[in-house]
Amino acid sequence: MRPIKTAIASFGLSGQVFHAPFLNDHPGFDLIAIGERSKDLVRHRYPNVVRPHSFEELISIHEVELVVVNTPDVTHYDYCKKALLSDKNVVVEKPFVFTVEEAKELINLAQDRGLLLTVYQNRRFDGDFLTVKQIKDSGNLGRIVEFESDFQRYRNYVVEGTWKERADRHVGMTYNLGSHSLDQALVLFGMPEGLWATIDTLRDGGQVDDYFHIVLLYPRLKVTLRAGYLMREQGPHFTLHGTAGSYMVYGIDPQEEALKGGALPCEEGWGSVPESQWGIINTDAGREPYPTIAGDYRRYYDSIYRTLRGGDAPEVTHEQMINLIRLLEACFESNETGRTIWF
Image (cartoon, rainbow, N blue to C red; front, side):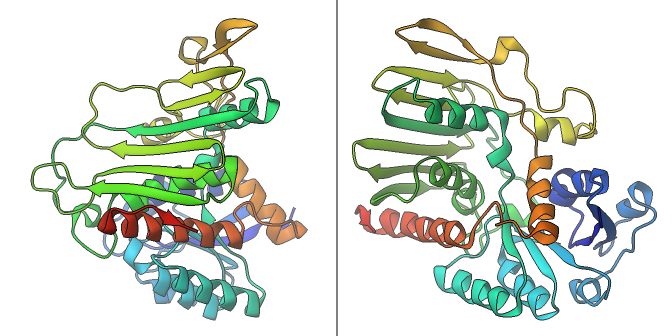
């Protein structure tokens, strides 16, 4: 196994929780640089890596083969372009970019230079989502007629001093968390025929959108995606209805909270949930708990290694990346016009 020499662009929450622990633990990657402008967190946690103080300094490191662009959303287009022009393969945090035009430009640049450009969609490997996909593919519920995904959070105040709460170009819940919800729907059902959405800012003093309700329209199938910050009493996370039964699961994949608490993905039982938190399946065979598959974000970087060293197709394809941005743009168009957007 020839490790991929990798650099992470920044060491905020994303770098500390979602990238560094997995890259440092994976034998297929050699984490050699982490960007850090002012704080001194990298030196204590990863003393052997280089600490560039700017993105330009990071991409100038000749040995780096893969750059993880996990900087604020508004920098993604510019930083991806700079990394590709420096002949670096790129994994970029969601949202990829803000427009289909930007997406196509960067994808064409990557293809022209023979480089990998893909998006970090770790929630494809949430345990509850993997379980939904397994049930849907099994046919146990018959023909699926309705799917609902709810990311329910409760934070009734605005966090000061973070770019995520500051009004800027499409900085908000729809492009940020909606990128996960829409990507999961695309994985399950493909591109819809149409879309209707309402987007709003519901918290007092909020500057960015903190609520969305999106309906994706398919033939004989309705998909509803919803998220907000004022949902203290939570309902199901995923609901799946079919002609032969239903499945419903509460809670959320435990990996993020475990990582925030200092756990490492190499620990025994990673990503698993106790039977008391399994979802319920209800069919003619009866109503009973359905085992939740253990989630594992390591599988994302497994796929990156297979792509760069084995020539496999990337987990997140260019077509999926473009379709996701097309859906996000349509959400705002629908919200502004009050119309259903047809593709």
